[in-house]
Amino acid sequence: MRYSMFSWFGYFMPFAERIQCIKDAGFEEVMISWEDECEPYALKKEKFPDIVRNMGLGITNIHAPFIGYNDIWEKTLKENEALLKTFVSFVSDCHRFDIPAVVVHTCDLDLGEHRWENGLAFFSELAEAGEKYGVDIAVENVSRQYLLKGLLDHIKTPHFGMCYDSSHDFMLPCGRGRILRAYGDRIKALHISDNDLHIDRHWIPGEGQIPFDEVLPEIAKLDLGYISYEVLANDAWKEKTPQEFCNRVRQWGLAKEILEA
Image 1 (cartoon, rainbow, N blue to C red):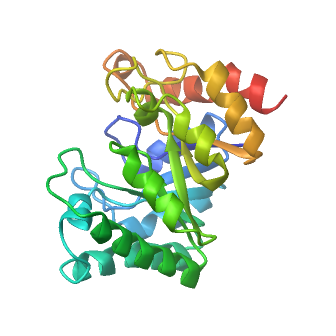
Image 2: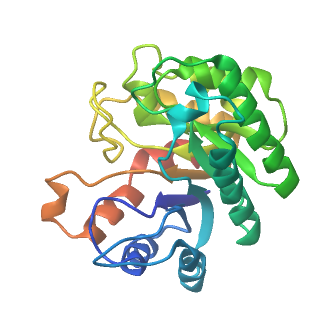
Image 3: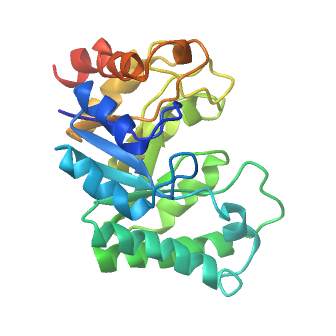
């Protein structure tokens, strides 16, 4: 079983120092937010892979920036030509840096008037890029899960699938594990974290109300060989060190009990 953690977990510190904390906590891999880091610790995203690998860690996937997701559905493919080119560049970056997958969203929270055909056309083109470059496109279950379900039902290419996010899933009454059970065989990425069943907290598993004793057995059935955490330190954790935070994530006993049984 490989363990991975997202490179941004709520503490403002240089990228390399965050990765060192993840490594020192016992993780084997990291997930990377694929956008330049700004002041006071500015760093170009193209520097990230070497920093991670020079510390002896693998890269599970990259996460595309939060740009223009509503446009995917609200505008035509022709109108989104520049946006599609940007997203295809992320897929190309994965190929260039030998990273197996890119995580993208379906839409933003405030999606306006839209057409299903717009989104299907956009993601079909992105799926073709995934096949061209041999990179998995992992579409995350955010709000409006029906959009993701529709994409998974219509786009059957080998490199197109889902990023399952437990916090997103369990803050939606229509979620609560249903999409995991129905589309688990399409998982290309995992974002495991906890919440209070109301707000997208991204707490450390065990700190909220998500029934992981039910979720993890479903993940274990898939035999993915890894578990990856997208967690954020809350105010209480920020009074402690980032190393303590990373250590606590890695030491979550239920994952070892169920996934390594």
